[in-house]
Length: 209
Image 1 (cartoon, rainbow, N blue to C red):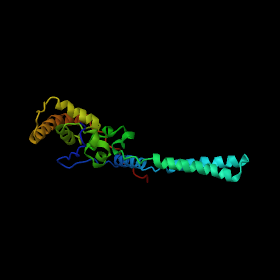
Image 2 (image 1 turned 180 degrees about the horizontal axis):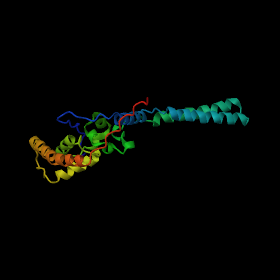
Image 3 (image 1 turned 45 degrees about the vertical axis):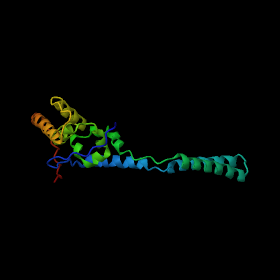
Image 4 (image 1 turned 90 degrees about the horizontal axis):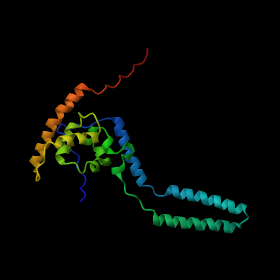
């Protein structure tokens, strides 16, 4: 049975990424997905009209009577319009595919696991089958993780493999397991980030005097 979409995990400190570049890219991808779903066939109508106008000109140049030259394209246009009306159905907005141009939600930086716009653009579906304890742990680790969302999920999954989950886990069991995963994962990330710090952005160049 397919599992429904998940609610976005919320970190204890409420942190979320604020990279304006990535937010702009995600917003544009969502807008493009919505625009693609709302196409009403206008382009197809215009292309068909141009073809029929060309046909009309060719028929007139070939000496076909004006009435006949006007009638044939008119009938063809009417038939084409009827087909478009009956065959064209508006497609539902596929927001879960909105980030496909970026490689999917899993290729976003790890912090976007807890970003509302990314969650609406397919992250919820992307993590639908991740165990709750691993998802909560990943949310707490994402601000320190140097890779992508998928890399983070693999990282937490590897740690989780060392902590067998109880069959009938209660809410308290899930909370405890998530804390255990964070307790193991955070020192690893802290040590890695100390050894390999992220490069600092270059300072803005001042105006030359």
